[in-house]
Amino acid sequence: MKYFRGKHLKNQKNHMPQNLSRITPPSEMLEESAKSSMAEKVLLILETISLSEFPLTLESISTITGLAKPTAFRLLNILVEQSFLERDPNGRRFQPSSKLRIMGINVLSVDSIRSQRVAVMKRLVEEIGETCNFNILDGNRVMYLDRVETNAPIRLHIDQGMRVPLHCTASGLLFLSKMSRQQVSRALGEEPFESYSVKSITTYAKLLPELDRIRLNGFAFEESAFLDGFIGIAVPVMNDRNKTYATITAHGPANRILEKSIDFYLAPLKRAAQDIQNTSSESNLNI
Image (cartoon, rainbow, N blue to C red; front, side, top):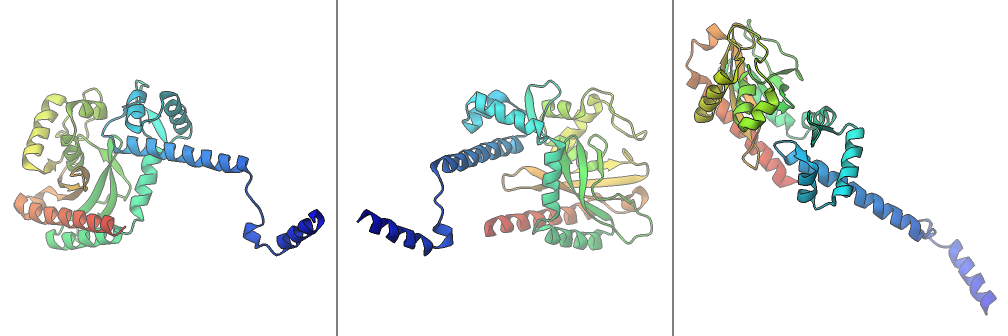
């Protein structure tokens, strides 16, 4: 009987589908489970840090994620070693690295709504007659992520992906206006700030009142602070959490822009920002 049973099972094995012919040993199952658990913890840490408006301590990360401090510390060190995270200057807090930010920027550059965003910007440029940019905050700089140029003979050429200072550009000032005093200090460091023209703001005494005006007005205006003879006007683009994650900026020669009122540019800029926000929200709903 035992022989017959063995023979029967042997024959049965020969006819067993290939995908069922190997049973995963328990040790391998545990290993795969551990890998999955580790991946979930790493993603949880990255998500927590990416959603924070400022660098986080080990204690904060442990509390927010629910991970034990030794586990969080070990994974944070791995992420730092792999250049996905970096420590702030005092070494106690963790923040996204340039590598992680660039990954995010690359995702934004090829996402499904980029073509719609650029279409909105093209309509905006046709309406106001000046070059427009879609800008994001990249560490302590502003990055030009998308750009549509005017056909006007005199225009400023800036390469896509270029990074510019916070304290002397319209987009940079707008981003700074959304930060706390502590965050502003962390982003800019000690004064005097680098001067790019005679109109560059180089001290906190001049910067902070300007940020108050921007908060009150809801837009940023900069004339010749970064490049002499050029003006920038920036409005915020909000996400679903009502946070400014980008700006729409128009810029051009000062004499040409000043021929028209600021309202001439503001209304179209705000409509474009709202159209981009609506596009992003609809895309999220369809996921």
